[in-house]
Image (cartoon, rainbow, N blue to C red; front, side, top):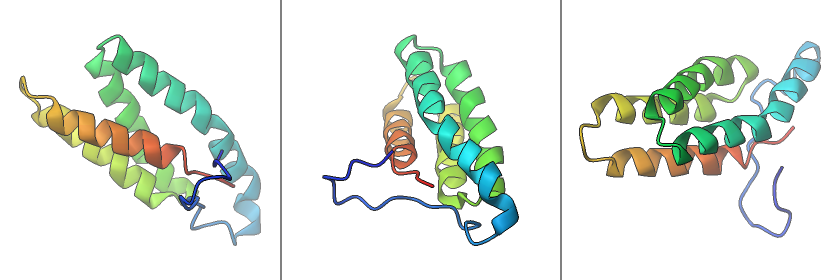
Length: 107
């Protein structure tokens, strides 16, 4: 998932050393491209409720697979969406940060 020409470090699971978690972590990582697509589709449609739902889901799931920073970023997006009134600038920042972090996830 990481662009090898980039100097951006990959984000690996904090649980990658736990053999019994290997298959679960791999499945989670394999689902990330679909998650990114789901986020982008909801964003492009302006469906902020769906973006919030997806962020909430990722916030809960990511730490269980050892991707705490991803869960934290998803939580920040969810919070920004809850606090946004008519100004979506903070939401845009958190959305972009989450998508960038997702693109760094690797097994």
